[in-house]
Length: 305
Image (cartoon, rainbow, N blue to C red):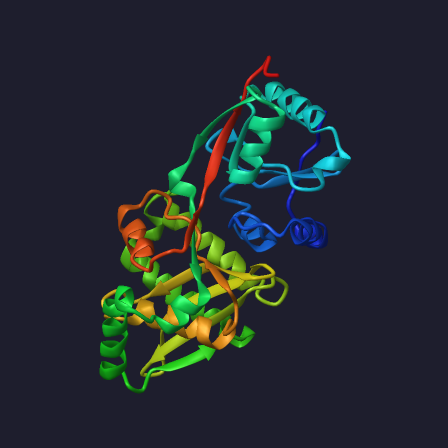
C-alpha cells in the first residue's frame, strides 16, 4: 500500500529535481506553491515506481496531481492500480486533477477508457508574453497604458523596491490591513483566509524558498506587493499580487515594474488560474493571454482498457 507523507522543507531538493526535469507549464508544479498551501490543502506526497505523486485534499476529499517523472521507466498502469487501491482503502474515488493536455492525450491514446476526463476551466492558467506585459504596446493595451500614465502622474514620487528579508514583517502588516478590508478571516474555509495563511508561510520562509518579491511605496508606506519565481526555464509564475484597489493603475504598476526589474528578459509569464471568480477572470483576460493552459479532471474507471 502506498504511504503518503506530509510535505516539509527537507523535501524541497527531491521535489525540485522532479519538476526541473519535466519543465512543467502549469502553476501547481513548484515546491513553493505546494509548501505554502500545504496546510489548507493537506498536501502529501510519495514516490511510486519512480514517479512523484502529489496528493492535495480539502473537506474530506483527496485527489492527486498527475504523476511526474519518466513514464518510459515505469509501468504506469501498475501505478494507477496502486493509487486506486490506496483511495479505495480510504473510501474515496481515485481522481486526478490539474491534468495537463499532453497527459490527457497520453491517457486517451495509451489507456483508452481508463479515466473519464473533463476540462476544468476554472483551473486554466493564464500565460502571457513577457514582452507584452513589460511594454504594453499596441491598441489592445491602450487602456492599461492610460491607467499607468494616470498613476504615475498622480503619484510621481512612488518608489519600487525589491523585497528583502528585513521587509517581511512590514509586508505582513500590509497584508493584514488589506485582509481587514476584505474580511479574509470571516470563514475558516474561505479562499481568502487560506490565501492569507499561504502568504504568511511564504513570508516566514523568505530565505529558503526560491521566489522574489517587490513592493511599491506611496509616501513611504507599502501600497502594493507581489511574489513570483521561475516555473521553468522560460516562464516566471506570479504567485501573489496585492494592491490598494482604490488607487487607479496601482495593480498595473506593480505588475509591470516587477517584470521590468526582476524578470526583464523572461519569455512567458504564468499568472495562475481565476478559480471561477468572474472579476478575476475579466481582469486576467483583459491582459490578453497568449495561451490558456488547459487542465483536466480525470476519474478512474474500473475495467478500462
